[in-house]
Amino acid sequence: PDKSKFDISSDALCELPPRVDRSMSSVTIPPPACMLRPLEVPLRYLFGPGPSNVPPRILAAASRPIIGHMHPEMYEIMNDIKRGIQYAFQTENNMTIAMSGSGHAAMECAVFNTVEPGESVLISINGIWGERVAEIAERMGANVHRLVKTPGGYFTNKEIEQAIEKHKPVLFFLAHGESSAGLCHPVDGIGDICRKHNCLFLVDTVASLGAAPIFMDKQNIDILYTGSQKALNAPPGTAPISFNERACRKMFNRKTKPLSYLFDMTHLSNYWGCDGKPAREYHHTGPVSGFFSLRESLAILAEKGLEESWKKHTEVVAYLYKGLEDLGLKLFIDLRLPSVTTITVPDGYNWRELLAYIMKHHQIEMTGGLGPSIGMVMRIGLMGYNCEKTNADKALNALADALKNCKKSKS
Ligand SMILES: *Cc1c(COP(=O)(O)O)cnc(C)c1O
Image 1 (cartoon, rainbow, N blue to C red):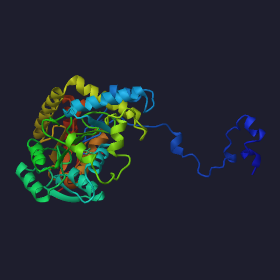
Image 2 (image 1 turned 180 degrees about the horizontal axis):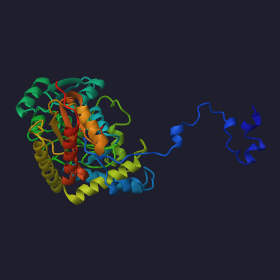
Image 3 (image 1 turned 180 degrees about the vertical axis):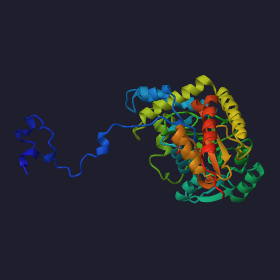
Image 4 (image 1 turned 135 degrees about the horizontal axis):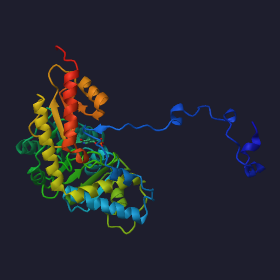
C-alpha cells in the first residue's frame, strides 16, 4: 500500500482530492443498491390505533431548519410545549415536560422515577397496556401486583380500593384509553382513593388525550402521560408527561438512583427548566424537529379547544357506530373510547384477510387486536385530524367492500 497516502505530513494533503475510484476503495462492503434509490413512502389513510395522519401544518413545522437543542429560542419552544401540555392535561403542574421518545418512554420514565426496587406496585390490566407497565416495573425490580380482567373489562372503585388495601402499593396504574380493547375507563374517584392510601395514581392517556375528557388536577391524577402520534397528530417520537407535587416528593426523595440515566427526572427537569436552577446543563440532545411538530400539534389543540375536540370525536364516532351497525357489525364493548373503536371479528371471516383487502384496495390501515385482544377484534381509529365524517364514510365503504369480497369460511 502507498504509505504516503496516510502520511499527514506529506504533500498529498495539498493535492486535489482524488476522484472516486471504486477499484481503489478500501471498503469491502459496497454501498447497498437500495440506498442508491430514492426514498419511497406511500400515501395511506391511517385509520388504525396510531400513528394517525399528520396535517400539513405539523409536517411543515417538522421541516423547519434545525437549531441547537440548547439555544434560547429552543428553550422558548420547549416552554410553549410545557404550557400546551398543561392545557391539554388540565394541570398547573410545574413538572411538565415531553419525553424524547415514544409513549413507552413516558411509561418507563413514570415507573423508573417514582418506584424503587422492592416497592409494591398495583397494575390494572384489561388489555395490553397494563401488562406492558407490569413488565417494565418487574424489570426494575418492583414487587408487581396485577389486577386483571379480560380485554375490555373495567374495574369498580371498590375493587381498586380493596386491592390497594391488600397490596399497599406506592403506585397504581390505569389506562384511561385502553386502545387494544377500545375501552375508555372511568377515572373519577380513583385519585382520591389513591391519596387516602398514600399511593401515586398513574394514568395512561396515549390513545385518549384530545378525544375523551381528562382533568389531571381535578381528578387527582399524580402522573399523567400521552403520546404524540395519536389524537395529537404529530409524528411519533415524543411523549408529554406531567408529575404533580406528590409525585415529585416521592421521586426526588429516593434512596437509589433511577435505573435509566436518559429518563432520570433530576436531569430531565433541569433540561426542561422545571427545577428552578438558573442554568440548564447538557443532558441529551432532544429531538428538535420532533419538538417543533409537537408544539404545532398542541397549538392546533389550543386553537380548536379541548371541548370542541372532545365533541367532534363524540359526534364522528357516533356516526361511525351507526354505520357499523348498519353493516351488521357488532361493537365489542359499551364503555367505548371515542378515538379507537373495536368491532367483534364478524363470524366466518378471517380478520387478517379483511384487513389486507382493505389495505390493498383502499389504502386504508385498520388493525386487528393487540396482545390479549388478538383475534377478538378489529380496530378503527379516527383521531384528531382524521376525525371527520368523510373519513368514517371511507372506512365504512372499505369495510362493506371487504365483507362482500372476502371469502367466508365454514368454521
Ligand atoms: C399507543 C399506545 C401506547 C404506546 O405508545 P408508543 O408511542 O407506541 O410507545 C401506550 N399506551 C396506549 C394506551 C397506547 O394506545
